[in-house]
Length: 194
Ligand SMILES: [Zn+2]
Image (cartoon, rainbow, N blue to C red; front, top):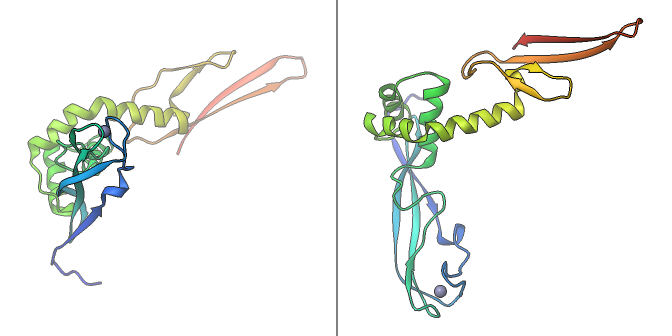
């Protein structure tokens, strides 16, 4: 194991062909002429000793049939995005899963992932994206971990009555039905923490 402290910088190149199918956004024509191009540089989530950037090649086209010019837009990196979406997801995961502050997240990003970022930026993401992030977590839980089910009705529908379980041990629920000799049905509900 070599604990060298040298930080290397790596670039992930995204060529135009990766995100553009070659037809005009407006009219679908393929008669496009490149007028100019440039590379966008966006910080990505790095690793210890590794600073990462994404290089996106952007073309500025003139559409010969429509007569107008337009600039390419990458769906995952909108023109105003200053950081890779991975960094934003990372920040929200630390905030909700590990319950740490925006200040600590900014420090971890800086020290362990080589991302230059301010506390204000991290806090603005938490404010802006929390609702969407939590909704995605919620749907993930409903699909994969039905631990929040507490009330079951006989027609098979259920109502969730538990509190948010992010970062806590997961409950596994088991519902079983047995028929006794007398003809009585016995419904058992059990929960186990894993
Ligand atoms: Zn066109």
